[in-house]
Image (cartoon, rainbow, N blue to C red):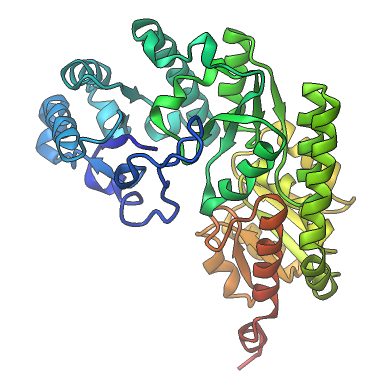
Length: 417
């Protein structure tokens, strides 16, 4: 996003940001096709107030204001800012909303204050809910005060859509957006992968929201539906079958025969392009066992994808899954599959020993534990060699699965010395 992200906290809370994020935005503006704008500032910078012990004792609102003004001075091309409070600054009661109003008035740009410290409780999903609700309320107020940020009636088209819950993890957007553009749709927003701040104000102008992440992103889609009558469709854009269904469902929603025809042409063209590679990987992966431990929606997304590669899912785990997530997981796996809610290390070890997976799809933390058992892992949460979404991304996913499973090092790791 082409905005300043300011974490109001001790410096440790801002660690995993500027220097370690791989998937930077490119400044592309979906509302203005072919135009690259503000590339140097686009989701590249994140700042922190680096609160000290003294600041915690005496309050840090003045420090926050000065830090934000300095960030705008350093980044004159930034189109706005988002302030995030954290556990420490929430506990001392710093009024970040007042600072946001003051700075917004001074610099003439939108500033959103997000109060979701510690994800607002034990559930990460609860924090996502809070962010979406707060952002929506702020969005409504800002649109009322600044009507120029809204699309004028003559600027709208019957084919304006939002893609919600797509975070551009390792450039997934590069393979997702063109599929819908080929259908004849205009992408007003991608919330929030590679997004532009000014376009977010136009979320209510869309005719349809296409929801990919069906947990945290559903909150904003539901609010748009309630407040602006913008309907939404839930889709999955991983694997061949799910991506094809997404295109067909969207085309069917618009109800135009020409769009349905284009959807079938796109599906046929994309499958033909990847078929030889997919068949090559399927022949070598068929029968392999896989365990999955990522975010709840991703678990049931990946389950279908594994089937397309001929692999057997033997265990599914998630930390922040809701009841409906587990219902979908149960529907998609075969009877007897091990399903664990919020597993600890001992349960993961027991799963490895009893289910004997050939591969573990997980995030960054659990891989170190599992690799000690000689089981290869693949980062399927914030993956590193994507994109993995869509038809073309499916080939990349299959490639990385094969490379992980077939790496000779695991034969050595399993030997008893």
